[in-house]
Image (cartoon, protein in one colour):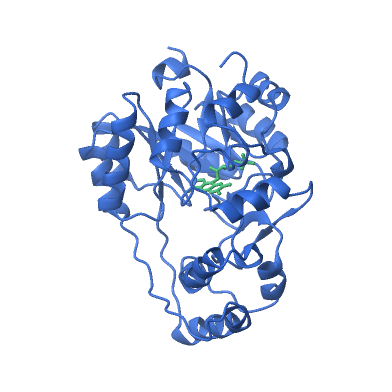
Length: 338
Ligand SMILES: Cc1cc2nc3c(=O)[nH]c(=O)nc-3n(C[C@H](O)[C@H](O)[C@H](O)COP(=O)(O)O)c2cc1C
């Protein structure tokens, strides 16, 4: 069976799950355009995930994916956390916030998996790790198609061994967080990684990172990838939930304007270079998810004040190619015939 037929999509394209950016309208518009829409549910609670799924279902009858963050166990010392908080003070002051709350988040991963099953979602994708054996079995018993994320050949092999059905291969060009989960974060360009991976594994490979033109979509598909996953090129779409200031920064970004940083969340992620990154470059950074919790209120205030210099402006290396329009209009420029 053709891979697209298995996933009940018309075109070999996945709308990248983008936690905090994907809205029900965005996911439904992608799904209705004939590609695989994905809910970026990483930061949601189990019940918020259910609500989001239902809102997408109200807008489309077609299948879509739910994307989850696989939690990691991180040891954290109070003293270190305090130092990381202190290091953020200069940014806080510039936002008029000498103090701010930093409630620590708790993963609701198991509850979200349960919701995926209960709501009859047919595709579930993962980043930051792989689900354990019990969860893989539960999802497969419920006919859920599983998609992993990998940034190295080792991670692709681990996904295959874990029984994952397909894997997103995330090149170094990609916007947002690195999906890395085994060993040090390494930055390998998509073409190099793809070449290695396609020769080594049997499961379908989905290519992600910097794909933002019709020519690039065509060449990546011709190289043997089953599909492409597109994030940054859709960020400024009408249906995207990206903050208006963030959209403006995306549309104004120059080539070469992004970099990989851990300062916002404690995990490596690619975004538009700004003052926050510069000021925090050589300071104490707590590991994910603690740094993310520490900076959450600051980022929220920055958005409210329209200060993109202190927001996390996640975007990939092809950000300068991002255009305005509806999801459907943007996709029509990337794939022919849509
Ligand atoms: C704003 C933003 C948020 C993202 N959030 C997620 C996420 O929640 N889950 C995930 O698996 N990948 C996430 N990613 C990574 C994408 O899945 C994908 O790897 C990336 O967008 C591909 O590169 P591109 O942005 O150059 O198209 C995000 C990317 C961006 C730009």
